Amino acid sequence: MFSKLIALFAVAAVVVAAPNGTPPPPVTPPTSDQCCASVVSSTSAAASAVAALVGLDLDGLDVPVGLSCSPITVVGNNCGGTTVTCDAPEAEWNNLIAINCLPITL
Picture 1: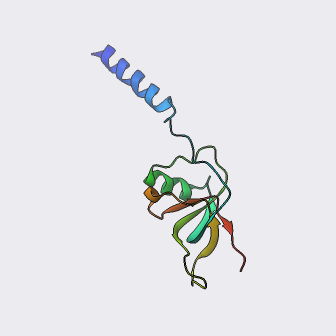
Picture 2: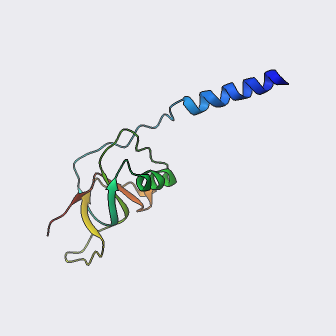
Picture 3: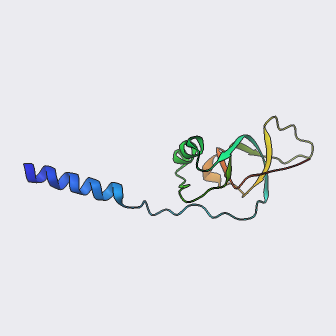
């Protein structure tokens, strides 16, 4: 019984210590105009929490990320948030996060 418990803890330690195998997303020149509720560092707790919701690994990145973003498709769009240009967000991120966001000066 005791040996099974030791084996269980050993397996759990290996699983926790092993990297998850998903590299961080590539950072490319921003190409997508977005209206985001906020822009924070990829190392922030808020960015990490949102990234975890969509299965995104931000480890190793230190770039601005937009949270709760939607594409700007109309000239003169009243954003009401932070207007940025970002790497085109992946569809599976459900407009919750965009990577490498730089402010747009109008």
